[in-house]
Length: 69
Image 1: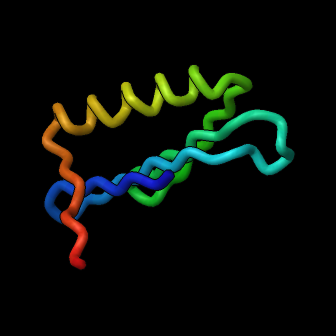
Image 2 (image 1 turned 30 degrees about the vertical axis):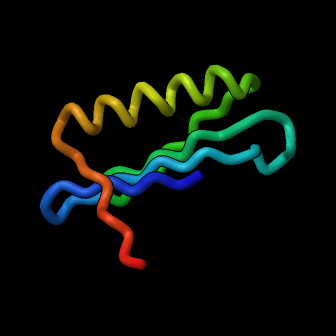
């Protein structure tokens, strides 16, 4: 799952995925052109961290762009 947030001209992304080696999960966060990958053995822990990040970003005024259908 990929989430995109914007604030003015700034952009952040958060992606959840299976790890490349198939042993666990990854939370990929991109901010200011810098990518960080956090690895988790538990899906529950990864999803909890994802939730924390998304809530914090929303509280800081970051918004998800509306998709155009």
